[in-house]
Length: 332
Ligand SMILES: [Zn+2]
View 1 (tube, helix red, strand yellow):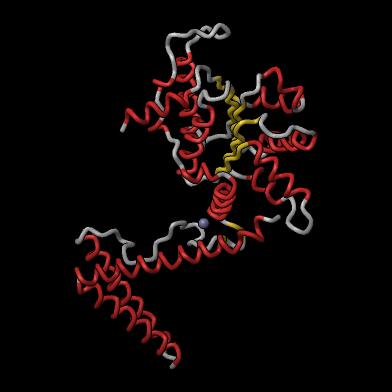
View 2 (cartoon, rainbow, N blue to C red; view 1 turned 45 degrees about the vertical axis):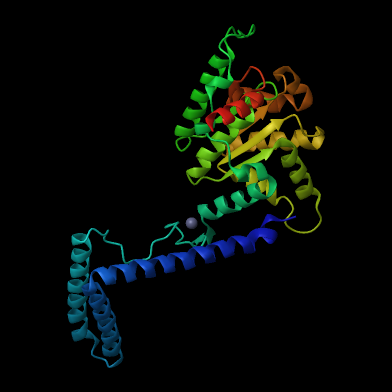
């Protein structure tokens, strides 16, 4: 299967929609401004008339003498327009086209290359297709509560309470988000089922995605399933999903260990972890595997990369999902 073939049309339709919206919004700004300041409409008409005259003089061979007059006229009209806009509290570019992505002017391409916003759109589409829960977009830091974590129990391995672990986890997560644009960082979140690993991963995913970065979020099972289909499918376009997986700004693999582990998964995981480190792209992995089990299930070299390049977050405690629903009900 090929992301390109299946979804390229959908992406280009989205750019078409954005361009139509850009033009419509410009029309609305113009109509509104002309109603408020009729002189702006006269200026616009005068600019159009001057341009037409300029073309006419070019055609009739009197370009040289007309050019200076034309420049002078246009400059005076533009100056008057800027002045009127600023006097009425509008920005100087109020009557010009504005774009969601100024880089590519909402075409998806810059100098024949795909724009960064194209990659984000493609990643978003891939994400929406394979993770409906992410599309629902529920988890964010505003919904996170430390009350889910006990300050009474002390973990015998770390000597800390679940609450202390959670506080430290959120602090690391916030640091990860605030430094995201400065440098590549990697997180490995581990702990038992239900301690909030997925919740925290999705909070981070939303924050980074909101900053217009390409974020791919996959439950581990879906990721390796998708990669297998992509790799073993007949026809052109095979391997394309891996391209996006290696290239997105942030990759999140949730619940590593829930997929069917085999040599294909093990080698793909090494490629993903290793290649993303080389490309300086941030990756987050969450897992409820005991760390000791890791080298046996995957490979020692994958684990050693993770030890060397990832920051570890350990969440502990009771299953927060029961507390979440109580918290949700109290909040209502
Ligand atoms: Zn763009």
